[in-house]
Image (cartoon, rainbow, N blue to C red; front, top):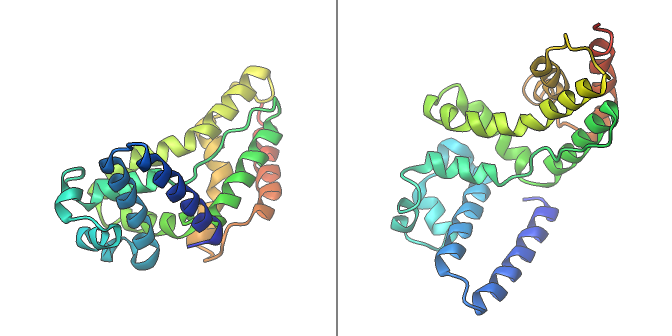
Length: 208
């Protein structure tokens, strides 16, 4: 796990300890410990090899504690994934700035947290596990929404034509990240952001 994420979890643990001393419910601590353990194991062994028993051992709880909250490992994994950093929407009043700053922050988080390992693992499993794909769909769609809203605001300001397909425009901006991961076998970098946005906007702004 990346150093930045370890530090964040250590800080979280310190806060949890302080909260526990003032009466924080043990069930809340156990819940977070289970989610943390799930993410750690997703990084270490991947989705296929992850088991509820393994999560229970790592979290220091019984399997029954997990099954009282999640009926299987699928919803557990999806909830744990939902805790990882997403796109932090920027609203500067400029389409170009909003896109570039949102992408830069995301890719910095991608490379400094377990997101860089967990996302490719789950994305690869979706094709083979329809139930996982179904559960992940709303989470994945929600993570893409900031870009849809950025383009909607740009259209309201008159920066882009009403004829632009906003959903497709959002895909044009985030698509190169997936291409880098799954087709080129590379690691997305914040240095990619400028060229990605400039090329995408070159086509989008030309329409209309």
